[in-house]
Image 1 (cartoon, helix red, strand yellow):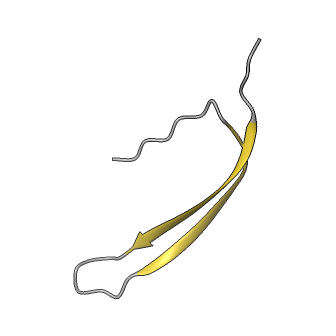
Image 2: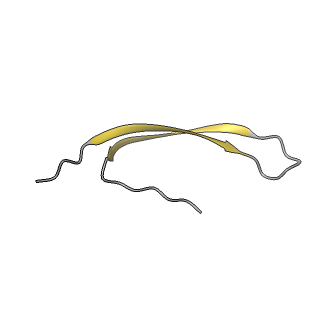
Length: 42
């Protein structure tokens, strides 16, 4: 029996094209994400 549940996640990520560019926070909303999910970004 699986104990995974689904959740909503809001990610706030700093985006900046390069060291000279003005950066900003971008918001990403993810709905119905399994708690068994794994996230990895290199």
